[in-house]
Image (cartoon, rainbow, N blue to C red; front, side):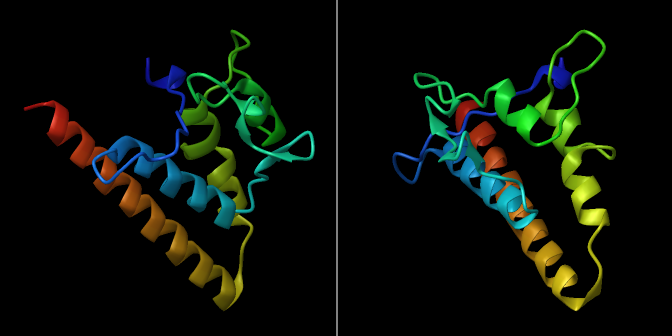
Length: 127
C-alpha cells in the first residue's frame, strides 16, 4: 500500500494543520532539489497538477518530474520521488562541491520539518 501513497498539497489554514504544513516543507525540499513546480507553464496548484477539490498531487506532475509508472501503469510518489532509486535521490547524487553540500543541508532540514509535522499530526489524531 505504501507504493500508492500520494501527497495532498493543501495550504495550511492555521498552526494546528500539521499535515498541511508538512506538505509545504516537502514542496520546499523538492524546489531546492530543482524539481519543476510548474505544469503547462503555470505554477502547480489546484486545477493544474493538484486536484482542485482534494489538493492531491496528480500523475501529470509525477510524469513531468520523470517518475516512471510501475508495472501496473500507476505512478507512485513514495517510490518514484523519495526512494533510493527515486528522482529526488537521483538529482541529489548529481551535485558536487560546497554549494551542493549547503543545498543538501537545506533539503535535510526541510525533511526534518516534514517528519516533525507528520509526527505532530499523528500524535494529535491518535489521542
